Length: 160
Image (cartoon, rainbow, N blue to C red; front, side):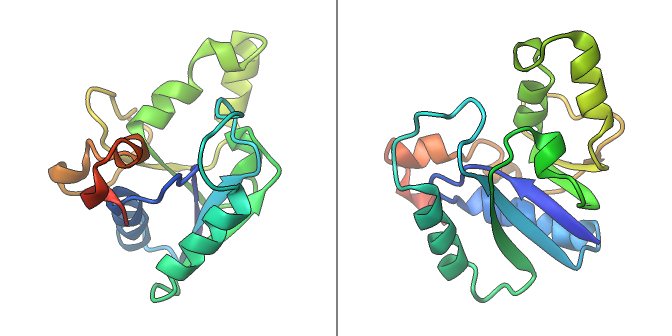
């Protein structure tokens, strides 16, 4: 089984690596692919390195973890990004975001997109709730608040 962990990884954090490792171990996956969209939905204007540079940096960072792959895609919607994967890995904050009506033309379209997702393995991200149908990944509470935004704001100890 192969997991799909979408994100911008701008930059990669210690929490990203911990979530990938938790999914790999706890879901007994052969591989976890970190998947970067060329143009991430909702992040069309991002500061920082281009997606191919971020993918190369991830490959170098994770070279000693052969069970992690790095993939770049033109897809934006998670139902398309995760197509063909056995498990979708995400944080509870991402789940809260993708269930927002603003990304869809209608509630029916949202429901159809969410129904098209593979099973989900989710990392805690309080105050967001992990839905009952998701596998809750066990990661250190110290990592729950770690973010790329924090790294870009100077929290260098969070950078992977």
